[in-house]
Image (cartoon, rainbow, N blue to C red):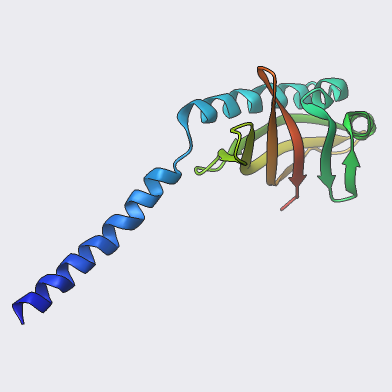
Length: 159
């Protein structure tokens, strides 16, 4: 009877330890997190300056931005999308934040990162009142030499 109790306690202890070890293993690399956070600040600056060319420069030449209107393929199309958007609306207070588990290295070469997070901003149309918007996104970054570029972004609006 005591041996069964001992095995039960050992099994219980292991069941608590394994998830903890898995969480630690899946924690994002602090250097990658710092890089992604810096990237997000620079991207936010481009959006808050309503600078379509600067936003598009974050993407690879063949990058894809999936919007509620459908995908925009290539840096040129992404720049046009943002230029059209910035002509209609003024963006301010844009920010994004990766979730606590991002970023993740994906692939086998260490040259791809997956980031998931949330964004929010203030948008004002010509003659309209400011509106606060927010949503969620996922991004895949590709290492291009010493730089990282966005390969794919999907985004939604939750409000």
